[in-house]
Image (cartoon, rainbow, N blue to C red; front, top):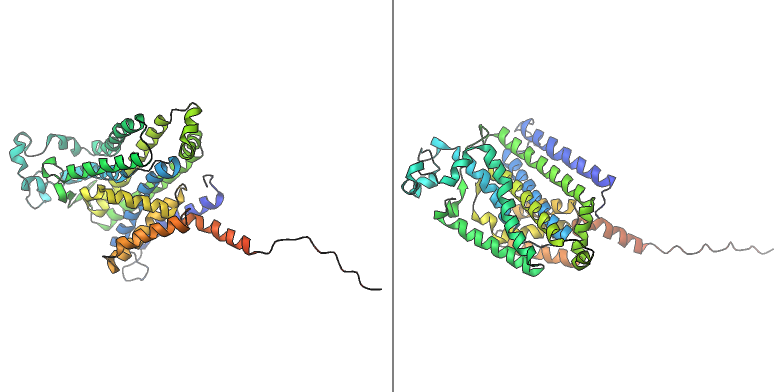
Length: 382
């Protein structure tokens, strides 16, 4: 499962061409009157799916490859989104409803009275005026949080279900903190109403196409990195930790260091996905880092195929496409659909969607009659 094949590379190349070339052309080059035209809204939805797929690859790097079930990966996803969202909010300027130099929610919450020396802008927001600082924060902030939490957890040899519960508690605490208006990040409304990115109107079709292509390139690069990592000695140790950590410890490896490194890398991957998610969706708020979102990301990996590289991508895109349909047609029943899907996959498809071809081949092989010895030719009577 972890060895790349020519067929896998061919499938990935074909999907990359369709996703990065064909779909943007259907949006930008095909006239709106054509049945083949892809609307900007649809392209934005696909871009959101690609960001979710990046998050799923990070979850799989932890859970599928290393055996660490973290229920807090959406915290890092949201932190990356907030880092870029802060820069986008500061670009609004006079374009907001209050026509002030600070974001509208700061005017509404009377931040000028709290921070008179900076005109109402909290001091930790000031560096985010610089795009380079914001992009660096997309990587550094999730990495620092993951390093602090992971070092304490792995140093204490917390693992299994206890690590899952602890990561869930961290996410829940962070969610409550971001819901507070005095935490200066927009409270329950979060950051929204973005206007400009890199000098371009964020709502223009050309900008949406560029963001979609950037999401596709990020997904392709993340896939290549994860695929490369599985072929290295480090990837072999990852899977050994997943299968039997005690044996790896007895072999002389410091498993805590390996797990911490993977945890930080997965957090950075999630943060990058969150950064591109924000300008395409147009909002980031504390609900995006909720524990239920992290649980959904685990379901994507399970449905697609935990432990594979392509599986989490298929699971993230497939489950979210199903969610978009189900929430429109069966809004109240969607959580039941998700739960039933997870149960069915766990019981009948433990290898996920990527395991279906192997199961079909196995069924066909069992149905074939066994090849017995060739009977000797019958001798004709003389």
